[in-house]
Image 1 (cartoon, helix red, strand yellow):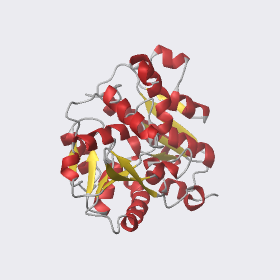
Image 2 (cartoon, one colour; image 1 turned 90 degrees about the vertical axis):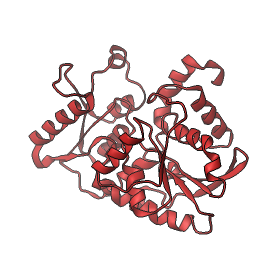
Image 3 (tube, one colour; image 1 turned 90 degrees about the horizontal axis):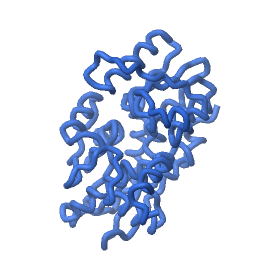
Image 4 (cartoon, helix red, strand yellow; image 1 turned 30 degrees about the horizontal axis):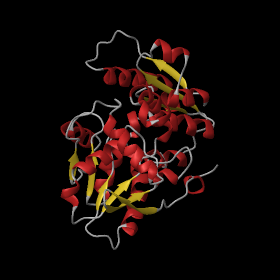
Length: 304
């Protein structure tokens, strides 16, 4: 069985770029693996050490989740089942799956759709409850992964990242390490290993993200940044595509939902870091750009 050390190109390189008239550093976790790169490589490293034969991976979340796509790949590679619970799909997506959803289905993912009627206050709570019910019915066969991989399992891979960063940061000037948050696991656990971690809340506000950190007993970043003007989660925005193009011109592609938002927040707060070296951890998730680009093309044709 291929282990994580055989699968991933550890350690990922730290590269220097000239951006917005200053040097910045990018931890290229996107280069760890062509499919499993980014924060999912870190969060699911420990999962790859388990014997998954005869098991069923079980998770829940959005229908374009990066974690969903990654878990489908791991399940296919390890020869186990993968069941994923999500909210009702649009009629179009049911007929024509796209992006991460199409990829996960091609890998053999079994999709469980939430019933429209629900007694729970939020869709997230409803799909989580359904996933837990399925896990209970499967008993010891189930390997339950919370949304986005936000669980203790993620600590091992994030711990390795912290060890790499301690070497990478040697010689840098009072470094500020940026790690964008979705579920909060990556940035929160990293903040428990090293100081100087900054994060950006991609979903919800800063108080919501702090609650996520507390729920998984993670560390608290030095600061949580938010864009000056709020951008609804995953909604196309001209500021994000401008960031995307800037970095593409420098030879690096970032995802349009998480990392481009992170760079936007960095650009809006550069004065805070005049005396600090900026280190940005690449979150991966580039498969998700396939569907995001289609949305951007419809709204901002001049960029594509």
